[in-house]
Amino acid sequence: MPINKNALRRYQIIDHVILQKDLHKPTIKRMIEVCEREGLKVSKETISKDLGKMRQPRPAGLDAPIVFNFSTQEYYYEDDSFSISGIRLTREESSLLQESLVLIQCLLKTELGDKLRHAMEKVLSTSIEEPENTLGFPVLKTMEPPRSRGYEFMDLLLQACRARIPISFVHYSYSKEAFKAVVLHPCLVREFDNRWYVFGFSEGHNSARCFGLDRMYEPVLLQRSFWNCERATIDNFLNHMYGVYPLREGKTETVILQASPLVTKILSANPIHDSQKVEKNLRGVGTITLTIIPTMELIQFVRSYGPELRIIGPAWMANYDKNT
Image 1 (cartoon, rainbow, N blue to C red):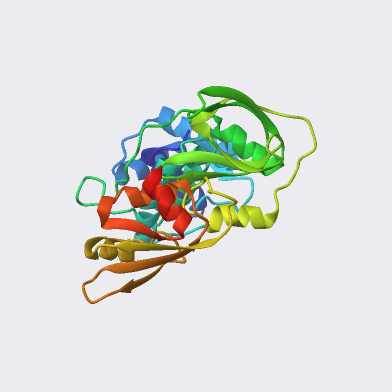
Image 2 (cartoon, helix red, strand yellow):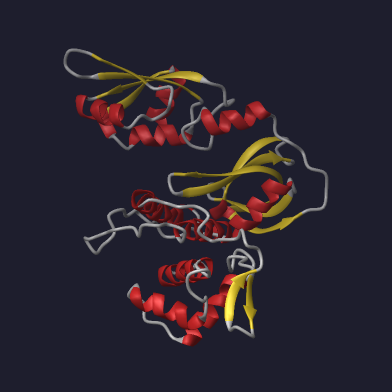
């Protein structure tokens, strides 16, 4: 579990007291006095628990080599070079990390996300300056959509991608309303439009495929040889598509869109893809050119703007847009 802000502050004070052993005896009494001076009301039991927590290994604790001298009733670090305050952050840097935690909480609600948040909070505990927010409420807030089905498999999928372990799962097709067994050699997990997908080499299709986590059931790790996807295939999936499901043969094409003056302004400020180029006529109507792999998601994106945005080319894609 992530360390809360008050605990982090107490850990910082305990660390400071131990490091100041030449000026004051690092006793529990001294730690309580410094806490109270800093506006934190604590008991002897709280500090004792904090010392125990700090000794615990990461990620639960700080791996602090704290030793207690029974004869002097003082605490010290067995390793003289140890300090949880090895990194010193300014107030501005601390505030930036605090806001970054909001984004992480939205994007990584998994065991991996918990570990990352915990790591960042430990870095924040080393800050000289406390983040200042005089407003009393968050200044950065992300939209947190309801967690979709299949998100509980995220940690297993990340493990399979990192360790290069094939997986087997049951996949449900919304269009066919049928279940099918799949063996996948996963390469990466990707988010698109607040939905999560796993991409890799599918044995059944004998090619690279993408599967939505919301249609996945009972994934398990397999003990068998791993088949890699070609690097070019992975790069196409990551960099040359808007979305995750390519159309036709999945080859890069020049896609031309025509946008109303208003939509031209919107897409100029929020490009669809890195390859986007925009040309405007005297009336402000835009011709938007993309060098991209056509996808169903791109067609759906264009449709979402109604008559304000339409596909000009290629011809097959323009007809697909009109007739499907």
